Length: 84
Length: 226
Image (cartoon, rainbow over all chains, first blue to last red; front, side, top):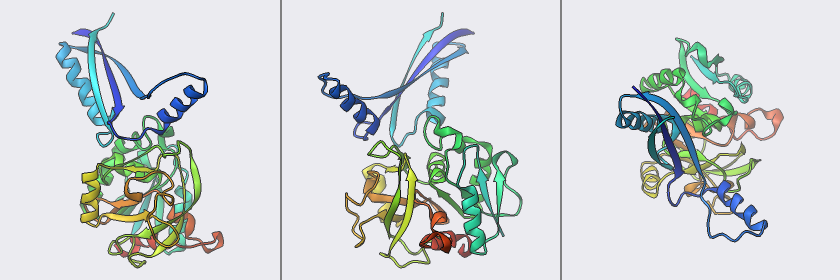
């Protein structure tokens, strides 16, 4: 078994309105920053012991499918790296 | 015939629902989620509130508790279920009802009366009304914007699964009358069976005559009808 960290990034699907990101964008503009757009995402860093990077990724994907992401509004991606 | 009102940590409309159902002569019990559904459960009401502090997404945690597996089983046997506000978010997060409820377009918590048009009066929850009738109920939510893909929304419409739409006083589902940016102005939907329904507005807050309007009583009477 090897120690891995799986990083799951959950984003709203393209086209789904994100009022919090929009509010944040407007606040940055009030601070006189110049920007075209802003997207927010949730990042989960999951430490786990697994037989291989593939196994760690498979388990992280199952976590995303069953809880971390809502398939109606979210896409997600998973990156796995050895911890330490 | 007892309706189980399922309380999670953070539920806060459970007693209102109990009082409203009692007023209508519908037997109901408050049930702590860890206790599981009582054997004589003949209906399930998921009340409003902030279960698990809305962590991750409103309703996400409660939807994955063991009692929701029991609710799923009861529903598959024909037991009626109604999810109100946080209960609606739990219903969608558990997949018992379609779509999802997410952050209001305003990014703010909104507490106000809204007018709703009855879209399908053939369900247990809307049988007390006429199709097209306009009723008034209160909303109180920060994550009430209904989201579904255009195809899903079209399917819901085709299948008569939309219960209520936000509308103006004349019954028109205008953008202005949409308090939270919901797709298709949808305020409530039914699951695969019409006996399973969720809505963001609060019928239990518009049932007791001493609180003013009683437009919500017809929704709760669904437990007696089904």
